[in-house]
Length: 181
Image 1 (tube, rainbow, N blue to C red):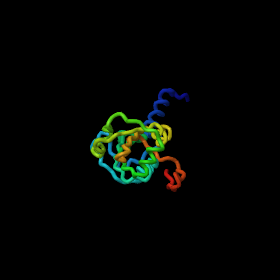
Image 2: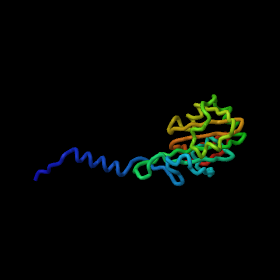
Image 3: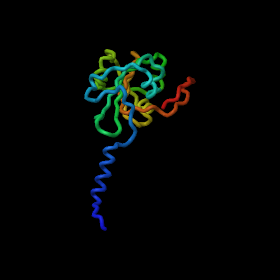
Image 4: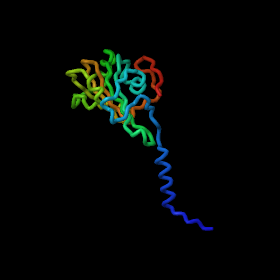
């Protein structure tokens, strides 16, 4: 008995399976808000997510940040997340960053950050940016991010999409660092 199969139907069925199951790695999105609520996202102060993803910030004094899911949670597939915030640097780490990288004046005022983060920015900040710092933190662009620092006020801002923890980190500058991952 001869079957009458059409190749187009098989391809369509395969495409539907892929679309319905999604692909790629899922991000941990607990505590993250949908992008449409970006301006009203609740500011978090837990250090661990920032320390894990951005060890180059050093042993900072305080972190205030928001997490925003950039995708529709009703659709299958990986979720893109934005993580943005303000970090108060220690005097030691501010000096380390200032002398280790070449910095230039940053365009803008940092107000492109989510609305919940904007009020945390210090008044009269003199923002600086560094291509070398950006490349090092993002591991040559493995994810998208912007970083700005005001060295006088010892404040660093970050805005990253899908920031990932670096592979296990070797001790830096004589201090042992825990593995990240």
